[in-house]
Length: 194
Image (cartoon, rainbow, N blue to C red):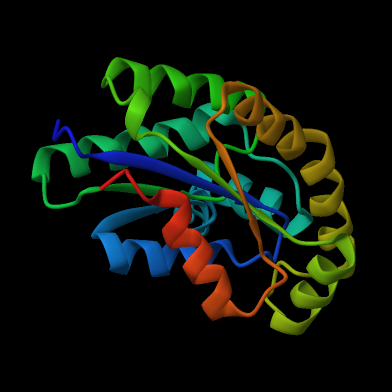
């Protein structure tokens, strides 16, 4: 794998701008976005058992089983590695559980990318998160689903953030700022990787 190939997970509360900032970094540095949510929503369109189960979990704001997510990640990573057209990947909103973080750690260590792995935490308040989610009005943004996602963010994602903070792999970016300032901070966060 290319020595400059980098892996950049972007974590944050629902509505923190992970999608917007992932797209910015992807364009700026020629990165491929791996969005677990996007992959899951796409897979939910298939009318089979797995598609139906994924749709059901998405619509209730539940957490997807790690093997389902990890299988999707591995297919994407293998495809990206084979083509060799990107400088790295952005994980939009993943890993979402400490278990997933350990699996991702094993991947970047396997590929000898310890120096090319950086996690960005887009930090916004709970109030700002709720406000943004209600404004965007996506089908899976019902009040009950939002409440459930807020709960799993605290229970599952916060420990992942702490995991990477302890490793010295975490960079905090204030997501409450205007988009241009957030983008500047994102560029600074990945400086030195490319």
